Image: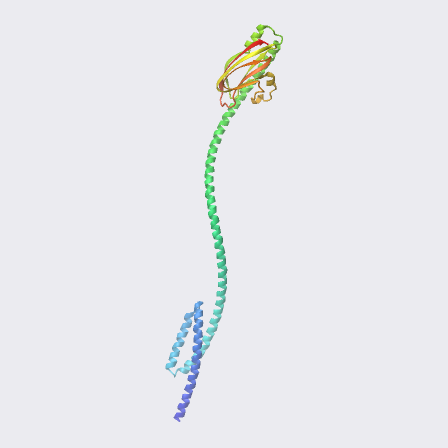
Length: 327
């Protein structure tokens, strides 16, 4: 009877041990999958600490199961819900892994796009840096040109101020010369009226005495101050039937211009107001002029002019001697 009871107990123990081994095998397999999934999950940043704690707890219960048969049934009963819980955790972890994998793939795609944008931006930056260096060189050159232009501007401003002062002085001289010209024009008009009157009186004169007096009246000796471009007119009349030998001596410290022309050319000259002499029979230029000329019957002017290149007035010495001879 005891043998039968022992055999039945042995058979129950064996059956329970087989069920335990099967469950243990399933546990071991699930534990291996769990460990594999735990490693992948740890790589992706999962909560490895919690799963490790559960594993240590199962390991402790497994060791206790080997040493204490009496608690095997209880451990088996407790292990089954733990298995179900672990399986659920595995499914949850696998779902989270898939979700994290999708997030990783998306992030990798965004990273690749960002890497391409970075490469493009870096190329643009290098190009912009080259343009900046070129612009910096141009700026330095432009700044140098600006400084030089500023110096030139200051110099030009000084020249302008000096020229403005010269202009004011020249304008004052011009107004003074214009006043003198108006006065001289009045004198000329008076002299020309006298000349016409004298010419009328001389038309019937034939005596040698009058001719001699006329020659003496056409000889001049004077020292006169002339402004720039100022001039002196000396009339010479050669009666009909006579020729005249005219000796001209003019001197000054400045350049002088001497012209001899007919009165009729002077009267017809449109440029007289601009101080330009009419077409001349003779003309000379210099500091000292000594000339002797022959004139046929007619009316003439000898003009002594302060040269246009002179910037100041000049004192002019004039000596003109006229000799009339029957011709």
